[in-house]
Image 1: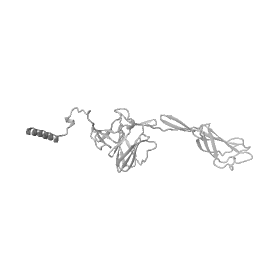
Image 2 (image 1 turned 90 degrees about the horizontal axis):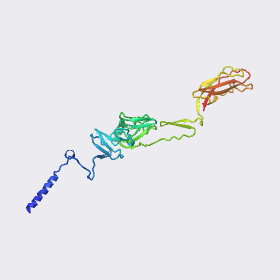
Image 3 (image 1 turned 120 degrees about the vertical axis):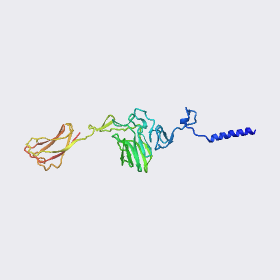
Image 4 (image 1 turned 180 degrees about the vertical axis):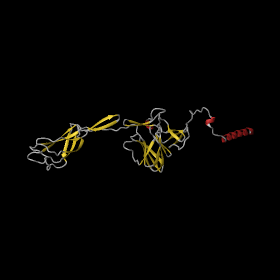
Length: 331
């Protein structure tokens, strides 16, 4: 009985000794063909609300605060995280992953998926701009806001009231407090005392501008551009305007002076001329009221010109005084 009890105590002591002396298993070198299919759960990735400032090639990280499809990152180069889940090795970076932005420490990355084989394309009218590599903006200090957008000339821009610099892929524009009207907005990031605090994604998968043409306007669409013009069949518009100096040489009875012609670009013979003297004519020789008649002025258009005739309706010669006319061609 004593021997059996002693043997049991020795076994228990051995088990306790083994348990207290256990070491962790090195799966890389000690395990082979591991099958986790029956495991209750597995957690193979690091998790966190923001990317670690440093990483080694081969690391993976899941950003818990990012949207599904934009939350899995791999470290493909030392201290450089790359968002996964893009279009692969060719094609065009597509969907809401195109030109997304994220921060890691002071670094703001824009367009992590953009590459020469899968560029991030932005279209303004009929012109397509290709962004072929990621851009980074480094925050050095300040409290304020950064506006990330593509300008109408295709430049990836970080407008801000902070202290920051951009890589060659993007341009930093200081003093910007709102998105320019002709830009394509991407994101808004805020910073406090030199630290990025939060970002708002303002990209849109679909969008359009509606132009409604009312009476008096014409619209022509071509290659994504809408060109508006005045419908002169409804609206009267000024084609040209200017002044004309009439002659002062004697005009014989029942005759007209040489025509006064002024060049007027765009004028057609079907247009109308509105004219008026630039001063009163009632005291100007030849144009003042007279019972014996006087001089008359008439105007007519020809292609590219306006023309003025001065004719003598009296029975005697008249030497006209100087007169200047203001004229306008309407259509």
